Image (tube, rainbow, N blue to C red):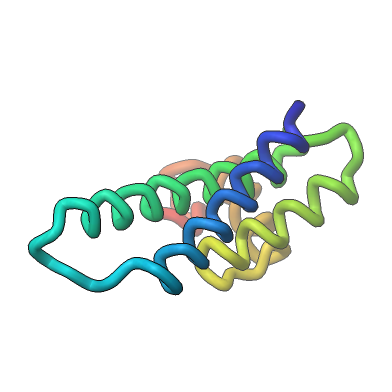
Length: 104
């Protein structure tokens, strides 16, 4: 089920991005324009969560599937290196809120 959810999130993000770049006009007076911004922002959250779940091995029992989906979602989220994110994330879990925490 995790693979289906991850692929759905990635696909929905890609399809919506294509749609808004192709068919939606920038119209700051239109509420529909802002709805598309909210949908895309919400989809970015899904990409982040997918990358995070992949780091913890929660998408699939197969490490390669987790790594593949993590690489894709991390790159689409912000062009980030999944490997570097994973290293820093586990350093964060070792010492949250302390000197060695990369998020601190």
